Length: 316
Length: 293
Image (cartoon, rainbow over all chains, first blue to last red; front, side):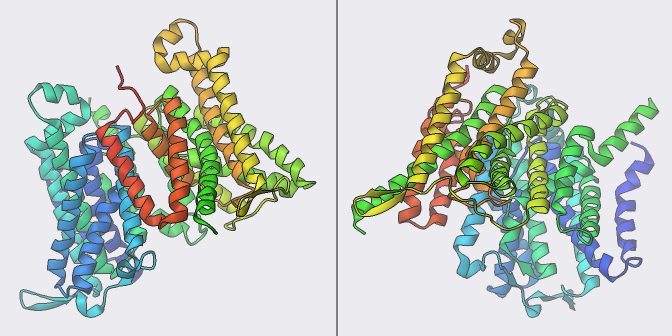
């Protein structure tokens, strides 16, 4: 690995930190949103990009984090850092439980089982309408979002606090992905994606490794959901719909499945495209659909995957 | 209304729903069985059928029976043509890889929905029934149109079944399903069979969409429920087993109708989805399917 590549993560994070002094108010908020959603996408990438698990149910882990943090902050009166931890724990536990059952299947069956579980979660949120307020959702009060950290009172509604909290969470997810990708476990996960039988023959149990990958993936999705609730003060059932299971898939595919920065690039590009387009037409979902089709047919490796491929070809 | 009449009504509603569901799920099951791919856009073919039926009734006009008959012929043909295009431009290019096909057909869901939203609009639109007829049962009257539509669905299912088991094309389809390479060695053009199966699957969904339009309104988001129910039916019936699909469609369709009349629909849906997930985990080959050899 060249020195330039080793320094890349630090450069990226420094660039993202510097970005907040350049962006205007509107883009500043959007960038914070992108960073939180990219954290969700990094989690999805661990399951899909690294391990090859095509899940259509990640919205339930995001929603678990969202409601876990939302309920603890709004109803439980818990401080935001603890609410964030509670939300992450909800995502982790749900992913572990779903994984224990769903990972007994593989391929198409796994996709359908995750879709079904996510649908059941969404319907459950609607069923307990009095508590969750269903589609309408609820807003987390200002006071529940203020907290003291090392003697300084911070407010999650303050743009600077929000941006840097989002960046810190993204750095955490990004660091976790890099550490995993370079570890022995990460190599086994890639091995399972590429050739499961061979990995099994080498003496590894693919089920346990997949369960680990899905649980970590769900925990990061839960973290992103919890952060979204606390930073943007809104909790609603929309985030549990199938659409929010498809988004991370799209973001990861667009950026490049199985690449460390792909999730951020994909989330950023898609967010900006949708944001600009919704000013012109209300059917931005057409773009989402076309992007999915074009990616699969023409650029299955996504933006960073294609760039990496070109570079490797030039070098040889 | 007495309990018996209530139950009879629930059973009737369930049976009518089951016939249409069986027709829709048959298309999904056929595509999965022969091509080994999951078409997530199957529900949108159903929706397109319903929307085309509305277009035939409004744009062509004339007596409802005539425009309905026209829709029954044109909608499946138009949707089959669209499906042929999808097969040619997308599925063949990704070589029918399972994961790539799923992602691409998810994309198609949005494309079809938004295309219909932009042209047809967000309103739910009703289509006049082809005829008016009321059947009297002890305690209540029932729409004869619904019974006729269920009958039509059964005729179409029987027709598809005969085509698969009695004709040369059906033989080619079944041969490709059992062993693609051997079938090709015997001169069966597998590519053309794939295209044909995909178009036939889409046409079955579209014709089911036409059949529901007189009793249920056409809407650009109407494809979601049939897709989910078809998934459930195909799984319970065993992935790739047509007989299992038909049995499961009637079991699920009728119980769905009865449950909807007597219990909270959301709770029933939660229980059903969890049940299906468990079935798939415990018996990946489905309740009626055979384990792959």
